Image (cartoon, rainbow, N blue to C red; front, side, top):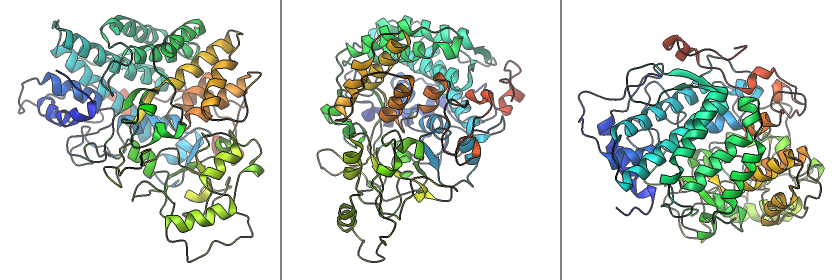
Length: 550
């Protein structure tokens, strides 16, 4: 069966719900999604596609209305949005404007506890998805045809990815490999690390060769990149570093046939699943479509949350005005904030005459505060920030988090096509999320080389050259590395993990605005390097134990 894209199959994911009966209680990690009143037939192709669809969807009836997790906000509880929030909102990259929203102050200040709903959302979502993967694997056990073997390898890859998120976020997982009524057991640290490593090794031979998979499905390069990510963080997960393997597997990805997109912005545009320039870098995307996969937890979140009404070229008719840049993130591109293009304080914003994109652009251009001006001033194509007047005068940093214009706007994620053609929908984006892309392999190898006292300049400068950066690195330092991770991957859902690896997330080694709940930043207790096991799961599963100091 020839399948061009996962996007063509997302409708089958909805059909699969008929055979899975996927509604579950949030307080029951021993999830049993079989509905005895539903059709018991097993649709292998449909359930397989749902395995991928769960990365970007949350239910069976479009945007909302038939969630696959009872009792949860469907828009808030998807895989990407929950993992993104945990890895971005507490870090130096962004702030959430509306501090009265549930758990947002705790995430802003790094002060959550075992009853925090946002930590429960991610924990339950990961456990739920793993349950579905176990169901598919049990149903296909013993089948030996080539297509089933490949599908099983990919589902095992997705399960290993979810266990990696558990390991990275919680340091442990409620572990199961089969779909049954037994309670998950606790697997943590070195044991969970070894399991993920072994899984990826066992399935590699049955996965597509690099760049041979239909766009949206995992191939051997995705397998190698997850291994490289695992090995790069080995010191955090096991107490023993393994930089040589991180270097090896990152190198395998670099040599696998993928190429860097020569235009950084195109990686995050609405046609990144059609534009060969972007596709050559994207190893594994989460498929998104403004008509077929409407949801509130994928790229619609990344685009709508970073826009406010009045901004030019919004890419959506629905600006939520939620997420804006922390000053520390802007400093990755401007070490001196005085160099950031900003509207002069003595210039008033007209109350009339800024009603269209063109009028706003003309006003912004007059004062050099367009995104194009930001890029030029930064000397880096990756500085996709907006300081213009659309939506109101912005600050560089704030002494009180009161609204969206308290910092610069982040316009990295776009619902515009590089070829200028119309998008499928003006509110719900078509933009796929590059969950794995080649640039990660270059920075992983650079860091692994640096940790082994080897020359890492070439890999960093490869990315800077792609971004037309005016400053090449000559001497690699730890600070250069952690800053480069941010410059390349800001707002891609990984920052906390990198800061933890550099021992910067909780310590006074690096503080940023509003870390620890103070304007200028302060260290926090080290137990916040991992999230707590939700008290709801501890109450339902005696096999699980709480992380220290929660």
